[in-house]
Image (cartoon, rainbow, N blue to C red; front, side):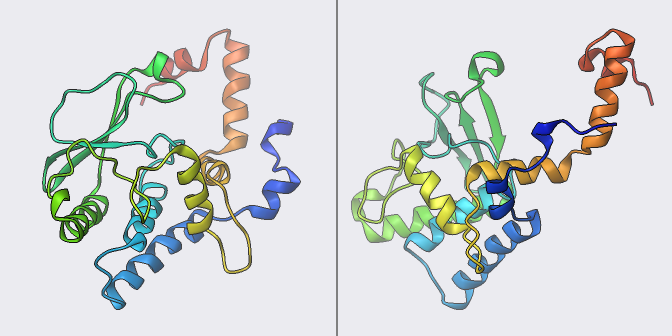
Length: 212
């Protein structure tokens, strides 16, 4: 089976390529920094949240950037949200993303480590600003001086947070490629594509045909 040209890393990708383990280590190091230095506020908490979002969860594009904190299920169709259902139950609700026209609204449940750091961030903001006791309707990601993130802000933050000690600076695009590369068997996928073509059906039909 021959690999497609698009399955070969470009020279630029090769220079910035990392492993999933290296990405996960960034999150682990930030967690350790917060614990050892007893950090209870500031951008490091938000950096840790971003590192978890792009390692614990399947790395989506930049739709997290403009997520609005909400405690109810009334959503505007062109906005993304962090729904807080309780202190230990949270979901990201995506309405505005590249394939929303086909996929509709997507809900992603937050695993415990993400819930924990979000709670810590909300508490730190409440302690810093008495008027910020109830974050409903406010942006999840904020600048140090206030104001919400846009997608460009999050893109730059990802590059800064995941910068390696040897100078490699994986972008979100690289992170998404790395995740897919380590999860997908390219040779097997090529064989399955060939089989589907030879059988005269789609990959979706092929999956339905396959039995255990």
